[in-house]
Image 1: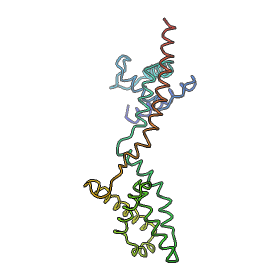
Image 2: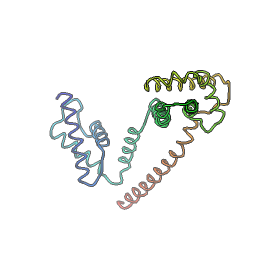
Image 3: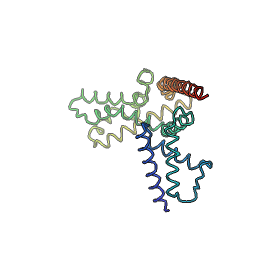
Image 4: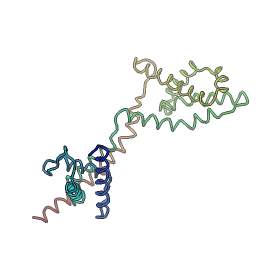
Length: 246
């Protein structure tokens, strides 16, 4: 059987398992079903040969074994598999984690960026107001709005690389060029800040990762506590079930 044919057969088996589980009153995701299919096939005790094409009898046997395991009640092994699948689906690498943070911060700053690029100033006062909005963008980008010294530092750096006299050229540029310039200025301000931190110069620095952890850890701890409570409840039920069998 070709690879395409094998993939089609596998999808069919997984779909049938999910459907049968639903009929038996068990909600099973395709990911969990696929994980179980792989575990059953690779278990040598089940007698499957991964080097040859599955026969009709093999498929029927595979589906029955998977259904028995997925619909088993009070099964610690099934709960372990579910936790493993959940971990695999939610685990992110460091790069992905930082990219998510970057996108989240961009979404928070986008209204202010849009307000800056859509601004159509007509007076000197409005021009000063536009520059002030730009100076407010960079402390926000550094996640340090609550720290006055960080705000003043970011504004001072911005004024050194983008003086107010440059605002006229910025205002007449195309919107996409304005957006690009704002991104470049953000990177410059952030780069100078990180350079000072690496060289231990300038003002006291705030660890961005520490701020992220302060927000994330309480939520994570609460989630773990809830999962432990559920696990302990399952353990009690399983022990009670085993005792009744005896």
